[in-house]
Amino acid sequence: MNGRKKGIDECIGRGCGGLLRGVGSEVHDGELAWCASCRRQHTFHVAEDGGPVAVTIERKRKPRAARGER
Image (tube, rainbow, N blue to C red; front, side, top):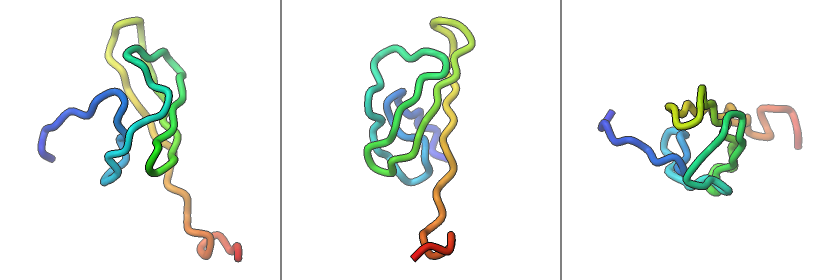
């Protein structure tokens, strides 16, 4: 890993690098945002106001063929 910190408004998906829609300078616990590039949902987890922010991302969706759809 190159040690570069991602900004609060950047997607944490590996290889994506897109920007999150609707993220301001402050985020609150449980706030949701979606990446403009990969369209995956990000959830922000904040223990207390002004504290460190943890971000989780939804799993990648399987391709349509793998799900059995046509």
